Length: 206
Image (cartoon, rainbow, N blue to C red):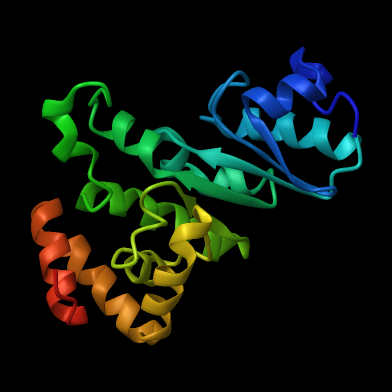
């Protein structure tokens, strides 16, 4: 699949290094980096058209800014799946630079406002009948994973070392449990109370 995004002015090598990741020979997802963040449906449409013209059957985009989460349904009309990058999404949602340690609490993936953005995207995925994933720190949190599933997330992407604890956590809860924990987290006043309340519901000790 040479020159996947020649229309964006980058070669396949640059694509691999700076933003677009090939999941397999027929699946491609656009991520933040040299290509820029997908904020509107028109960007997703352009990317998807270029990829499909070059034989990619499954094309997805990253949702990493609030505008994209709010308009996830229109983005999903243009591609086959989306994945939420919660680290960047939190940074832009709270206008909190990740380099400023004193703002770390705002970047906690348990922030109810961030989870609300996730819910908006998953609602769009359900409406469109298309997968919605989460990657990054949030996906690798074994206690948060059931909450994400309860919100409607269908894919979790994480480092190999996190697979076992996340799998074990999900295996102990029904979908109804996950949905209940998602509601608890959304109704919390802040990240700390969301985490504490869900851990108490799940009977997870520190």
